[in-house]
Image 1: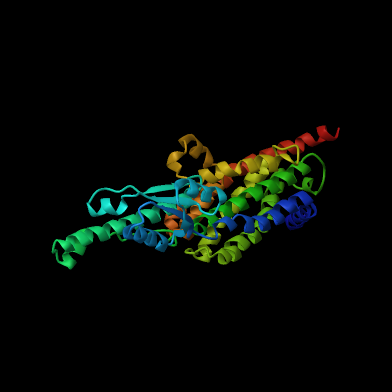
Image 2: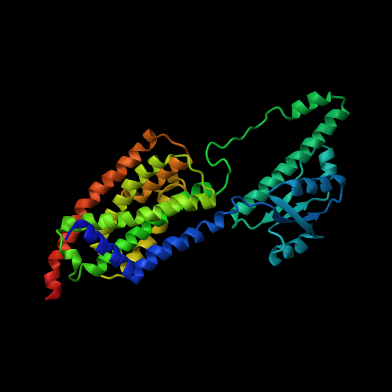
Length: 382
């Protein structure tokens, strides 16, 4: 049997197997919509705020207008007391509370420090941070105006007064992810993780079902079986990769800084190493349900160890060392550096070489595992 015919039969087995077809085709399609959905709004804006104004002064009303003008805050109403405002929170009509104390204007005009009260659910830390940032900016604006009035009342030149209050101007320019949104850096990493996990599950289920019985997969040597299985899944995942990195990137507005040639050059060892790892792992399973259960559980550790959703400095070093054996880790970081950060190929080269090294590591393991399972077949059938 030729290798191409074997690969064709392998792909046909994938199509006919409901569990594998559902995992690969259904999972790839489903996750392409499910995972990016929470991140499409980029950053939290216009978070509902209820105000308890105990001062009822011109400055407190100005403070409320400044807060409402901030893009992260939307003032939804006023409450007469903190208990009433808490009811707004419990009813879901607001996500946070601003309390302006009684002596707000009086203390400001006398040059004393004023404390504004803020309450919110810090479990939603993004919403909490957006409102705190907005209120801080509004408070600084009010303090700035009061100080400016004082300087002008003392006869200071208006230009000098402005400069004395704005001695340091901050020009914040993000180096990467200039939109400060989530799709630009979360979705590319998630897509590669989905490709990695579904590929491992697909090879795992197929191998677990085949190694215990005879079939077309026994018509080649163990090394031939490993190479053909890697080839069949790599061909299949070239299509899935084109869907994710091509159409889905365009659909979700993910930036593409790398050239097509660089992306293909990085994806080739990533898919080959992952497929080889999948074949090696498949020889460890005797039941078809185990690959899905075990590999799904490993998704979150791999996600954190990849370093794009959680700082690697906060993860124990032994876990980071072990994670370097997972093709998804160098693959995700390499793709993010190359495609989202605009890194040169020389900067991605260590991760590219690491992927080829993983392929060379898993290839003999897969060969040994398949050979061992084929030798056990007569005992199983006896």
